[in-house]
Image (cartoon, rainbow, N blue to C red; front, side, top):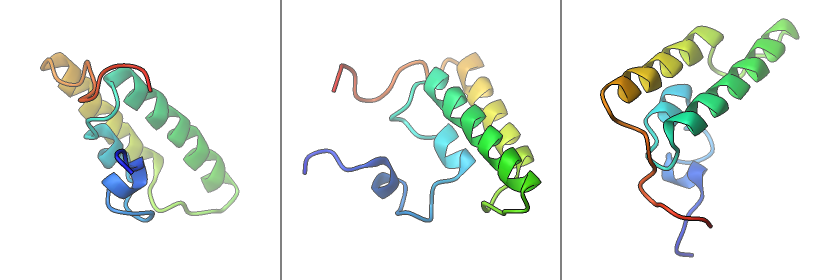
Length: 85
């Protein structure tokens, strides 16, 4: 297949991390922030239920800050592949 999926591009099923999302060139900065905010809500809920998803809300906050720093530097406004799929 010409386009592989996001998990495969990021190293497999066990390699999706907040910072990996923050540095992924397939998403715009807006999409990264939306994904990270949703992930933070999921992690916060899981933490309250006593489930560990492998990272904590602080790690997600760091990834969000990284995306924002990139936007301030002029990075991340567009994806590598433009257009509709």
